[in-house]
Amino acid sequence: MKDKAEIATGDPTICKQCQACLNIHSLIEESKDAQSGNEQQIWRCEFCLTPNEVDLEEEEKPKSNAVNYIIEAAAQVQDKKALG
Image (cartoon, rainbow, N blue to C red; front, side, top):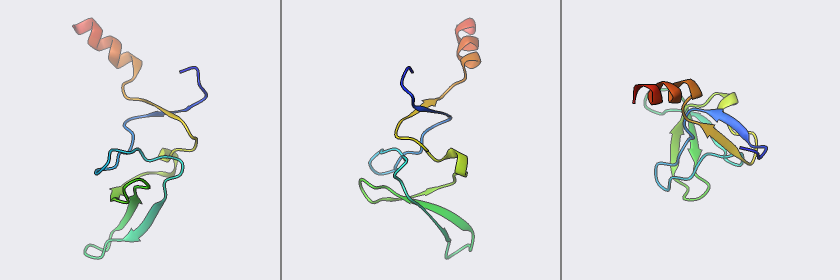
């Protein structure tokens, strides 16, 4: 983690077709669902063009070319080791 990558918690947003990750260059379209009338966000994967429905807050969108995802907090990892 010595690089200057952005740090994010949780899971990355992955394309359901090709497994590419949502990134700084990804575009998210906001529209209304024709059937329900609810607002929805669609990310069209820039690699395979598959539309992916996403639900992201502005702070969850990548803001740099590199992102390191912290999947589990350090305390959770230590708790698992202590139990094992």
